[in-house]
Image (cartoon, rainbow, N blue to C red; front, side, top):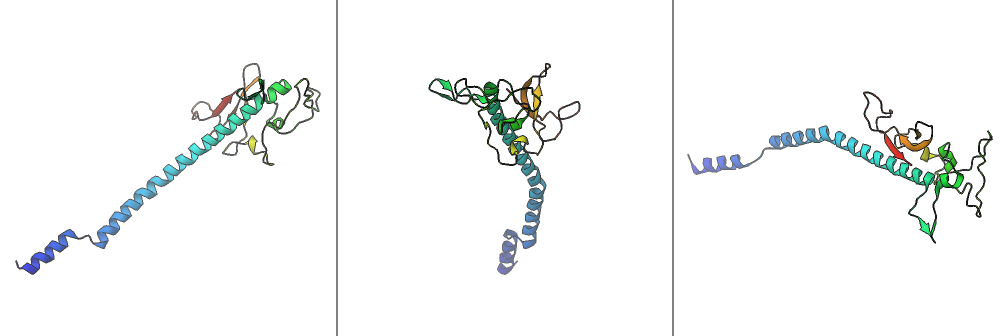
Length: 176
């Protein structure tokens, strides 16, 4: 074999053709196309779960107050339940004083001497009542005990269905 032939074969063995390069890029592209939607969907779901939990904790603090906020030896954020004497019947009561039309309860205006009455708003409202809905657009609901007392607030979670037989237990619940 001549010197020129050896040089030709040596160069050919070490090079990569454009077809081989395109095949490798195609295979990598297929892996990315296959796994990207799954990873992005999981990240989106986890972000929505975190946002819903954070909002539920804010609603909980608005209802029962935050015992860590103390100024001058007194609680600063006592919450709706401590101010009115009962949990809200609807979450809208946390942002605006709802007059009682049924005569069940007089939701009086805040009295600085007795430190009782509606001292809200307890939540910040965006004007569209966004605090009523979780990250999937479903309404929050109260969690009740066997005596029909509100003991928490809950969201349906990612699947949009309440937990039951055969369903995923992905409901998000925050108790008071």
